[in-house]
Structures are given as structure tokens and as C-alpha cells.
Length: 271
Image 1 (spheres, rainbow, N blue to C red):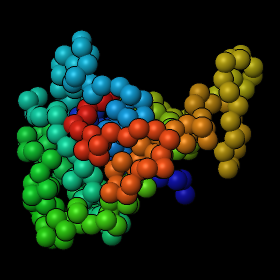
Image 2: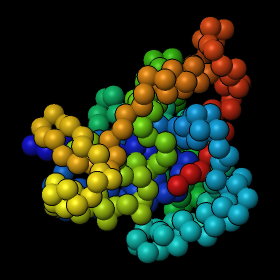
Image 3: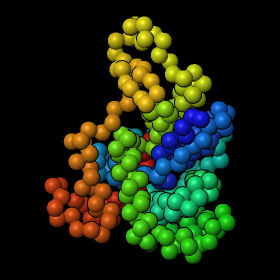
């Protein structure tokens, strides 16, 4: 049986919302499972890459505000163009982490409901109470979810998810990994679909006609690939102290100057 498609997401990204719908369509078409993996763009985009949030970026911010609803229309996905693009996704990410540890299938339904509540219905998912309300609509006890959002064990598990995403080379959402091959962006769903259908498009590279492709190994085979670079040990060391700012633990031994922990929850929307 083929491995599940890895789907990395952050609730703050409308493109991740579109990707969450699109990847489930692709998976159903090919009889594949999808492993939903939360991450935080407030870490990867703002802290690790040192970029501005897309809505705060001159020129690009205006394009973003126009493009994501246009993409939603193209994909036939319900959406609210005026949905807030600046909100704190941490409560929803922690709630999802809690639910996934108990029931992965239920977590997918919950994740879909959170995305839909914010990006299609305009409900502010930065509020723990609003997130718990959505959980209740999915048959999850709201009080349990509210308690989980402040539990140290859940916070630690979410940090582990963010660690894993950065180790995998994930820098934005949505990101999909199929048989070790990474695709970034909802506009790459057609490529994901084709990759699964064909097993990759490597015939010309195998015959030596494309010298720019790199030979990469997986557990099952060796084949040319466009991307399968994992984070180097140097890169890993550079971002791991950043993650510690998400926890109450002191960062006095870190080799970098950390921003206050609230910076990691700042609203970020990235393609």
C-alpha cells in the first residue's frame, strides 16, 4: 500500500484552505490517504526565513488579496473574500494537534471545519472559544478542546510537528509530499495529481537528456528528482532555537536572540 500523501498546513493561509480541499479530491481520485500535518508560518516565514507576512508586503499583499478568492472561484471552493487574513492560528493548531493524537480521521474532519469556518464563513478562528465551538459541531467535547489548548503536553506536541516540518524542508503552506517529492502551493495540485497517476516524469532524465536533474534515493528506488533536499545540520541548528520561543522554557543557552513568544503567534498568510 502506498504511503499517505503528507499535507502540511497552517490555518492562517487561505491557500492552505484551498489545498486542503484540493488534496482530498486528488487523494479520493487515486485511492490514497492524506496525513494532515500542522505547522506554523509564524515560525518558518517570519522567524526562519525572516520575511514579512504576505498581507504586509508591499505590492504582493494587494495581489494576494485578489488572487486567493480568484483561485477559490476557479476551484469551485466556497469562500468569503473579506475573511480576516490577520489572525492568530495557534489555538486552532493546538486543538487540531490534540484531536489528531486521539483520532486522525476525526482530526481531518475538524481541520476541514476550522478552515471552512474561517475562510468561507468569516468566523474568527483566533478565539479559543470559537475553535471549541467548531469542535463541538464535529462531535468533540468543547470543554476538552479548551483544556487541551492550554495543556503543556499539547504545546510540546505542536512544537514537534513544527520541528518535523522544518526538517522536511517545508517553508510555506500548503505543501504536499508524495513518495518523497515535495510540491508547494495549491497551484501545484495538478502536478501532484499527475505525479501520482504517472509515478513521476523521469524518462528523459534517465536517458541523460536533462543534466540538471539530481539523482536521489528513496527506500524503494533510485531516480532523478527535482527536489528532495533535506535540511542540513547547519540549517537545523539555525532554526531549532527559534522553536524554543514557542515554549515557556528559558532560551538563555540559545545562540540567537529570540523575539518574545507572542511573535510566533502573529498572523501570517503565505502562499
